[in-house]
Amino acid sequence: MARNHDEYIQQLFGNEDEALHSVNESIRRNGMPAISVKPEVGRFLSLLVRIARPRNIMEIGALGGYSGMMLASALDKEGSLTSLELEESYANVAKDNLNRAGLGDKVKYVIGPALQNMDSLHSAGQQYDFFFIDADKVNYPNYFQAALKLATPGAVIVADNTLQGDRVIDKNDTSESVEAIRTFNEQIASDERVEGILLPLCDGLTVCRVKS
View 1: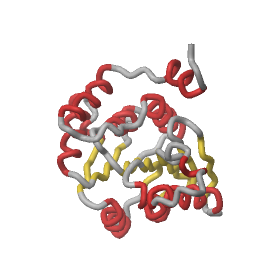
View 2 (view 1 turned 90 degrees about the vertical axis):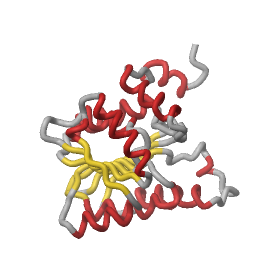
View 3 (view 1 turned 60 degrees about the vertical axis):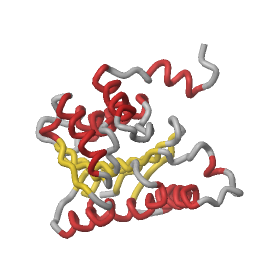
View 4 (view 1 turned 135 degrees about the vertical axis):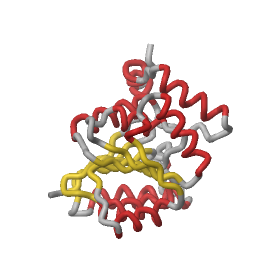
């Protein structure tokens, strides 16, 4: 019997197949932080991709490829995923995992500081119609602004961990990461260029759409 709504959702929608299970195994095996999205968040991402039908997705933070697998598997045949990852060793693990899942041809990894690479991609005229942000929390407000420059009209922007274990509602918590997430959530709520909402799924998902 579920004790709260989080457990109830997890029981219904938190199952993962062998490919996803193997991603988390590879993360543990390589000594990487066990901070992949939860299965129910991954399922929500896949659903959003299938609804929005983006041609070009940008993922900020690859880790071992768990979210990348959920995003890439939901793409239409002609769709592609650009995954930005600071650590080359992490990107290599993610690449191996997606190759084993038969999704390697859909994904391109860009190594280095995400904001720098987003600026380079913008200068090159690249555009994206779906973004998933799951990287260093202090830069969430900057990632949002950079994504807006790269976004097509109607693009969807999703960010994970935007409740920070409910620390965002504790005004006494003034840590840098929590303050940055508060700023990010306030941007989504007040920026007239987007329409969005914060969902209390797992550790919080903030979702917005860039207005046409």
